[in-house]
Length: 327
Image 1 (cartoon, helix red, strand yellow):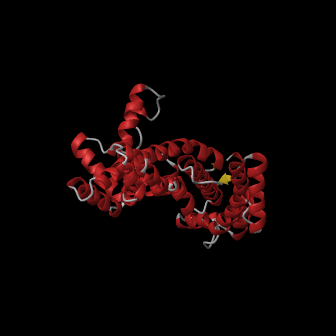
Image 2 (cartoon, rainbow, N blue to C red):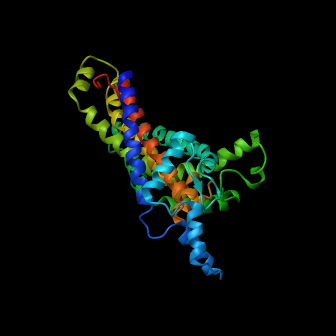
Image 3 (cartoon, rainbow, N blue to C red):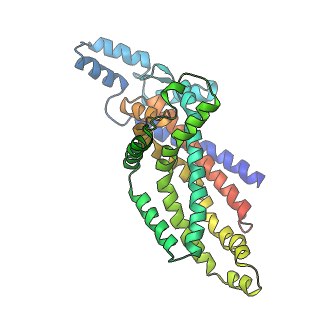
């Protein structure tokens, strides 16, 4: 297993390099660059910019160099200095912007993922064991409704409901009075209160999808011959259910961790904008709009690494859960 993990970690290096090349060139595919956008904004505000000034701005930001040279300089800075470049739109180093919001983004994503799996697995098991019962139909209805409802629409509905019920739409992650102060027990309770809507909105779609997967897997496993054999030996239904079909049915759920984490991170962008969350989503959106290539590229590169690590964790968990899997 250790050799397998080391081999996978080494394979990550060429994959990340290849993805970084694709990301860097795709970001520059739209016509123009950050300077073009800045000049257009200055012209709209009535300022006159000469061709010489535009050329000087491009030279200042390093945008006058060939694309390959820009990519080489960017990767060299990352590998040798840990420098992910400079954000044109925020006028700050990219690393400081990512560090500022990365912690809260991962926190929200992990809490949402925990909610997703903790809700989906028990409901999926219940729906399979109580197939065609009222509870099964109810959870199936909620599941289809959750998958069909756009996250931003659900966020607006929950904000309005919260405002009319509690007098607070619960925007942001903490109330305005806690924005500047340090951490306290009151601020922690306020954070947990504000986390309810983001967790429901971001995690609902994935939860509903996983409920359907878990239900289908459980129904398949419960009809396998080994379950009938266990029943014929007099084992209790609860022991059979938890020890055999659930263990086998949970494998596809574990294999979804890698892409689930990515979908939670990317899916939270629009929700974060609607709910005014201080996560990476709004920053990424602004970087793409303003063609801030180093900030957008660094964030996409980070997500790539996260997906690869998530897939590796999924494979390790699968090997731990199912002894039949060998590497």
